[in-house]
Image 1: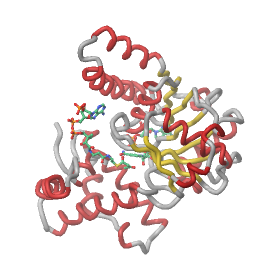
Image 2: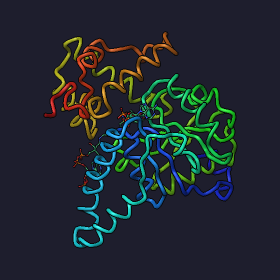
Image 3: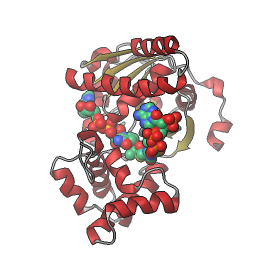
Length: 302
Ligand code: CAA
Ligand code: NAD
């Protein structure tokens, strides 16, 4: 990008230790990729059972990768698996996890107040050099960083699901982000094997500003009776070359997370026509169906 080109890549620091807060769909993928690229990783979640689940997601994904990467080399595959696993620790104690870390990547529930509170706490206990980042899908990074003193060491790192497969990383700077921090984030993205794009702190950054309104319109098509979920998905896969149709993708992203994104936007930008809610999405979430991760959403996965 033009901003990146103007900057000197030697300006940034090297990230060695990574703290991932929230070990769900995204946090587990981020932790895995960081560990696979030789970083020391700690995952934080609220309960041990969530951490166990996180490690399970990582093991399943690693096995898929190793099956291909080490097809003819079982020993190499086992070594890779153990080396990656040994680089990942878990804890339920945030303060412990950030004691000596180079970067924090927050991937908890998509709720502004919860994120603000978390960063206020981390800012008080993390070492001075630690960079703080959020993987939010939709919330303004500036708002998430509101109560943080180290504005120069704050930014956004927006990954895509499934993190081990998707090559993009959106890197977001806010007005206080220093050139050194921004360059460190770009370098870190490269070290993770991702292609980075530079984003301003605008709603949904690049991908979700385009993707989420499309996903919502697909849900509203079902509501209006325009087409069936199956036909919408088939149409976009075969007619527009998408790897997944929009309804499948909503289930894949998580319907709870999708609803949080829309609700947050509706609150912040009530007059934006492309950020309108879907009654059907709200209804399915109300039934406790959050998509593929819970076994049911628009479709059934059991
Ligand atoms: N871990 C490791 N490997 C994985 C994996 C995982 N979790 N998921 C898939 N793979 C691998 C498979 O092993 C397979 O590898 P090979 O082709 O080398 O054998 C490859 O990925 C393809 O997988 P599948 O054959 O099972 O299925 P597929 O061809 O449909 O690909 C997919 C799966 C990559 C997920 C693809 O369907 C896809 O790209 N879907 C769209 C995903 C997308 O749009 N993500 C963005 C969501 S929006 C977001 O993330 C932002 C936000 O804030 C909400
Ligand atoms: P998820 O529900 O799968 O996981 C969230 C995890 O965070 C859970 O394990 C939960 O126990 C934990 N958590 C919640 N509050 C916490 C706290 N205060 N401290 C520690 N852990 C806490 O959600 P997800 O899909 O992984 O999304 C996480 C974040 O990433 C959200 O901000 C979301 O918008 C963003 N995101 C999601 C996607 C996606 O496709 N699902 C893609 C990119 C970004």
